[in-house]
Length: 548
Image (cartoon, rainbow, N blue to C red; front, side, top):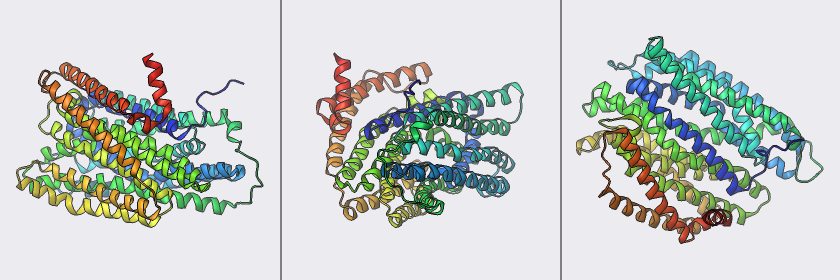
């Protein structure tokens, strides 16, 4: 029988790297398509797309956000204990839960789409209409029938610490989705001459087609490797565990993950219902200008945040089964090691990426979207929301895995309240000071995530006696490397200017600066031993092998 090379168990670091690479590829595909997509539908279409997608993410969180991580945790727990029968039934129960939740959320979103659209736009005129928003929300709701099942399959693989197939499925999903978005919107507008709403409707339907294709891939992969899943580390006298107990365990594990995703989606929802109105009422923007800024926050600028966030997502997916295994085995030293390693990887990769994108905001925005009044200004600051959100994701997931659900809720609610309280208020304050008013919106998000992150750090550090000394040491080394990188980039800017209205020149500028900046940073951290300290010996050996 031919061995499936994508079906190996992975260590924490290797699993994190595999998952992160898969997610980064997915997000890169998700950002490259916006060049033609932006050219096809424009900023008004981007705002309409953002309205639909923001609502979709909230309902997707309700139906499936916690499922893959909960299934991963339950499967990992039963696999470690050697409970084969319970593991199988957990998978089948997870599928049933996903089907029911997906169908309920689909019905709610379809039936209440007009009310949601009215709540988003209110009495604003001069931009997208309530009918348009209703239409695209109903179209994208079909994805909620598929995504929850897909999530269960991904969690099943990840729970066995088999990371490659879920990563490949994400790439497949994105390739299909992007193809439908670009080709579909182009055909609707430029070939069939239909409305902008129809073009956006076809684009959002890409989420459904992409998810279904990825589901087929994982379902086939599981069937072909069924024997491999029907093994456990050691044979034990498995106790009788009822479906009710397994069901309860899945729900208990899923709810905090669902809460995490919902609260993160609510940050975007708060922006969606306050930014346009706030900029129009308190900063003298027209509805068209305000929707242009909103499209940058919800659609165009958010794509770059997804690239940064992909690192933390990959780390979290690998962290959950590893941390769960350490908890089941009551290995506190391994728990501390995994938590510090996860945070160190995130900081090592995300901080320089964020600073680099912020530094290159002008040529990056021009490369992807062309000239814009607000674009580069939004991106240079908004990218830091991705960084803080990514760190928060690792911290809040750690608290969740430690089963401190009360503190998870406190951290989430505290951050969201900060966001709600300061969102419109900071628009007024920043506008009054002569600073771009949308910086107030971005600052409110950063403040919210910082408050939540601080609570999580206190819980992990003091309540569970986890020492962050290694993470702090690595962070200091990372900051020194970034300072060196910025100095080199600043010197480079004296010879190669960042300003260019030409897209080809913008591409060359981004390429040269990225190459010089990343080489400087990685060379410094390699020579100082930071890279080895964060990733271990295996990565250093790889570098030595390639340099010989």
